[in-house]
Image (cartoon, rainbow, N blue to C red; front, side):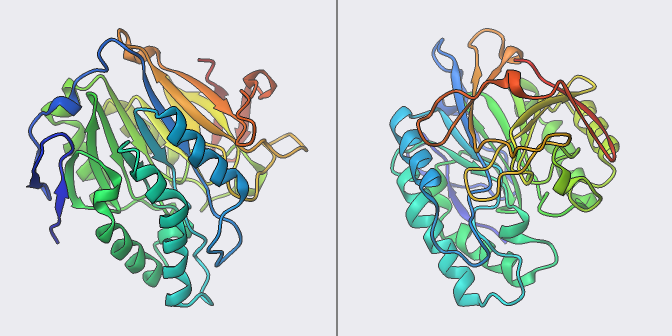
Length: 328
């Protein structure tokens, strides 16, 4: 399947499926200024909901106001993954997402990168995946992305902005197919990826759990240590995930693992804590000189006050490993 997709900044369209796009002005650094990446995740409310809570509306308005360089969503944009939901209901959810989130952000012309979550396109829910494919095929231009490889869009794909190389992989379920790893290896071995200032991977499920409700197999990527070593061996600098509904910037064996908090419903306590984590969205700031020295700030969706990372535990022990807090 091939799509004609927009190459931002070129003034024309390229057929990008399976191709490497030429460098453009969108590929260069940020004219000496720090580059800001906004991270949102887990926007949905209860199963089948076609509307969004006030925190989602507030964050969309704030991002349109502050205009970061890139906006990333770590999945669960709609509330699927339930057999009783009809095709009409699932499509109505995507239309609700379009009117509340996608179109307001698309009007800013800010690139909108995303990954599909388990409530968007669970591997065991064929209708959910089919409708997600239909929605994102119809709305590809609203992403404003400069694609490098879109041959498997919207399930996994790569794109470039200001010389930051981004990949979204199919982590809507715990078992990531072998062909996805093979595709990623090829992408990360490319000249464009090697020349990039950073390589950022976006996926829904994390490698290691940080909340009690997800501290079990099936709620994290299977064979997490193998995946971690794959990321490191292929020069991934940062893995951003959602699913857990708690913000926790982590690191393990030198790799940064940003657990995005939710702005939708259902915030959860971090393992060992009794109080649920705060709802949160984050801004990653990448300095112009040393991209590896990127930093995080997380904000409350209502009021947009900075959340103090000092309240987070120094480490979290899950069933498949330990992660440490990444102090940036």
